[in-house]
Image (tube, one colour):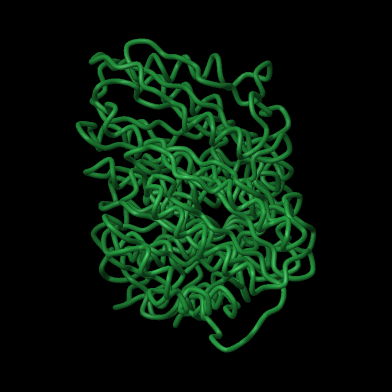
Length: 609
């Protein structure tokens, strides 16, 4: 939430005027005259007020950067460059992105890194043809104080999405009247300073600082009539909203783009463009091939063979996570399932994003795991979907190659309440299948099992058994402890203080990887967030497995990140998640550390709740 301090006069500030150029000559003249009056009353210079101006219709045109004019006289003499231009539609979202990517940069004069207030006044006469939500949020995250002035056919609700406060939306029937008596706007531009205030959650959140994303991401876009030209702007905005939240460079994130219908077509490779601006520009130019035949599987195969290759920019040999984001609006017409398996075996992490006539259930089988399949009824909802996806895009890892050998400690914390009595054989079988491929031994992999209800009940400790045969017999002979409800938070603290301790066989002090698999079939009566955070701080990597009535948010809070959280409706559905868990547990120490590091990115925080 951004709060304005209405009476604080600030000397230094960077002010950008973003002007709809389709408003007609008379209105443009009025806007130009307002800017002239505003500038005339201010001290202009690199240590005072700096002014930048851009105009837009479907495309955006730079009039002047913040650093272009260092004196008032020079600036005033250049205002004649603000001119009316023809056009019936405007793309406000793209214009906001232009300001963020091209004007709010130190090399273009922005003093944002010095905490100088950054203000933007948007002036528009009609509704945007593209989505404004993502670009507006991206500006707010930078701390930009946006004001919006609208007239004629401008939509007030759209203006409110852009402005940092509803009170900073200025609507009028006639722009000339608004700008001839524009004291409110002038006062806001002259006095506002902004701070970002993050409200504290009621249940304390564990904050993970994101340091770095090292990923190769390929968009595979349905270019058929199932999407069509009317929905293409929403698909483009969806991709651009993702790109705008990433740092595109050869050292961090690379982007590739393909489209497909009957045949696949490469738009650009992973190494074609190395900055946000070029990638956004190229996506903005995307035009669909059309057609009614949709060979999704063939396109996925083509992407694997032609996009995820070192010769065209893939950094898989350097450890970059390989990501495919499939965007489609039609049904699967060929064998996409086997190609999804090929991608998974090649360590490519597949997301699916769908709308229209796409089959949501079928696409869940295509995604690396079902919760990486996203569906919306309307294409217009796709740009806002990015907020729900972004954490998964930057944190989920998709390695599938199993590496045998190596020391690690694996503990299970399972539901031991009366409610799972009829399903306890499934729980035993789940544990047995997880440990089946593990090389168990005193100097290899150690295993512990704990049941919990109101209180935890240890079945055996990490140091109890020295062979796999002993562990298997103990699990097979395990009886239900019983109890009415779950206190999973207390049980997690018990795992930290007792089970994962040196005295009971943990080798954490020897830097041996520590894994915890938590399985629950109901909601915990106490908070899991704090205890889970303490385990993670100690270096334990938790998995969360929720069945039946388990609380999905609690399971996600327990897990290290979303790729370590699994939720199923029935115990018989546990089988498909076993390969994923075994994959992570079987990673070598170096690969595990690399995978966990790749779940981080520059200057971003997310909460595990």
